[in-house]
Image (cartoon, rainbow, N blue to C red; front, side):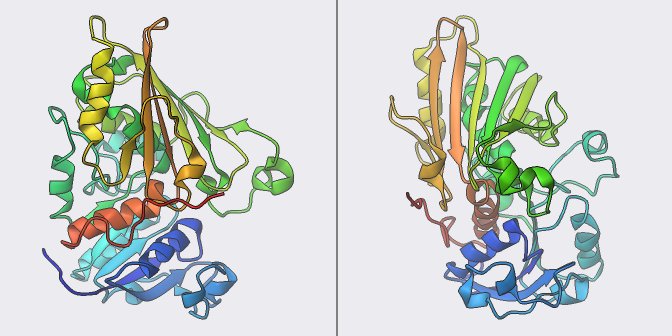
Length: 358
């Protein structure tokens, strides 16, 4: 489908971080018209009470999240807790609503129902086209197949933010066959907005400032099967993954440090070439010049992933690092980027690679 006109978009979960960031980007989109804004517990209140930075929408009143409110738009964005999207998406389909539906939650990301049940504990809602245009498929030296899939999509499952950082860091080496995906170690520094807006004691400023704390240690994080899935798409026959996220006292940002063994006999000089080939033409993923290292502050507010790779020859391992803004490239920016492809619009519409500093 090619659309050369404005599109209306409803956002469910507009009072949360992901919903608010999606609205911020859509307000700068040349073709987007903001329709219904829905919430659950915050229904009946002004958006400005929850998203005071979105001045153009501050007086809009949040309505209850229901199919009746969401229907009738060209696009529906579901920024809802995990497990809540499947029912609404199914109800829209049952009504024959033609909207493109974009799910920012995890409900439709995984292809393996057993993996969903193991990590989320409920029945799987089904698999949608995966909203990472840069996902490398086996045999590709540069991303193409995933964009083709998104260009036909009426349903889009936006990746997890940690997943995006780990995937973009390591996938060129997997696709090129220069790293061994059977022994991947990923340690991530993650900003607090990645935990969502629900009030929890360990997320209070008095608890978090000046402290770094790991969570979901020992393979229990729900992004683990999704990372394995992506590296499998890139060509890994099997993925062994040790994944440890660490909350650090910043509001936004992920810095993923990912290592894997250099394949025996692989030329260390071929490593950087694989990353260069994968990302040379990418508008939103940049391999930094040698000697420069990704920093989260350089990506704040931007739909940018900054990547660097090095070979630790003494350890026999490749070290790949990715920095991104978890709310933009990690969530809302990926949604808009994928949506643009689905609507036949320029992929960069409404998105910037310029960060905010200091």
